Length: 137
Length: 140
Image (cartoon, chains in turn green, red):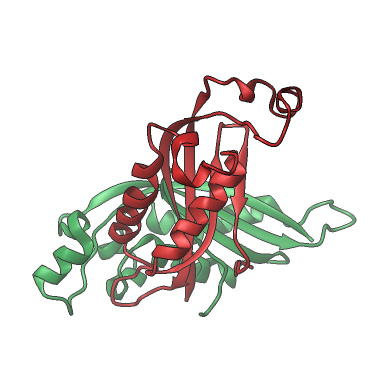
């Protein structure tokens, strides 16, 4: 088994708010991230796929295809967007880094040919990142 | 849905690697320049990984305010700008980055209850890093 990781960057804005919470609860839980006008990050995405090396091509995955899927499913939808207002997953889910990693996994999982998705890592800043391996619980 | 959250922190400290049970020659042979009796320092980078189910009401594995608060209080302020050899836990053991990594893992495991502690990774320099996951790593 060989693991291959492809990186991409996108920039987006978001804010954290749970409509079931009181304003005080929202502020206590989310702090400055509760600002309804949003704030932004330069996200770095790392997508790791795994598979056996094809004996003819020497590839685990066609990198061109992986890159295209990542662009179509993630970057086109999220780059330079306000996640809460423009990305359907976040109309109902809070766009935390955890939920972003899960949403990206769900967008990519069924679109990959041959190689199997192993890990989605999303850096919100260089000092904060989340890994999701598709584990339900 | 289970996710793994990693947060990076920084602190600077000095240490001297020296084992009382070894002769002066053996200490020098084992630790080289790190045996200098005056000590030397590093800018450490600490990575703490916690895991757990993502709480659907907050979208979080654990609130960063809790994680940052705990690590700031119990780890960073304990070691930042200190001489590690003078800290109680290193009175009897050599403050190598291996031992410091294990010590930080144990501080986290004893006191941090907001998520499962997965891994502590400590960079001594950009070239050296150490990782400890105790006996209960769950990462695939």
